[in-house]
Length: 145
Image (cartoon, rainbow, N blue to C red; front, side, top):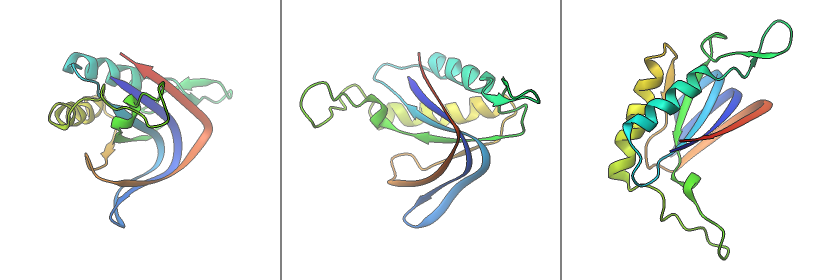
């Protein structure tokens, strides 16, 4: 399981021209599931994302979590995080989990994050999503379990 976590402002997600979700500031979390991933890994991801201290405190030091600053999370399913472009120019996605495995883990991840008291919005699993994102910093963290 892999996530790309970006500190963001004014982030929105649309499908077919319709606004699905938006957050005023917080984290955009791109969530990828690999074949064989488990709920235990989703729990580890949620704990890490909820606790990441990547927001600045009063001294300008990254020392606060998304919950501590009153931010929200936009959780976005993204199987392309497991794209392998080592050979040739067309990525292979053979390591990415099939939708029937990935979707329940994506839905569980949203609930696990909410259990930390953080507002979580989601995209639509498997949809062609358009994301308008204003990165803050920029701050980008990669995490895999």
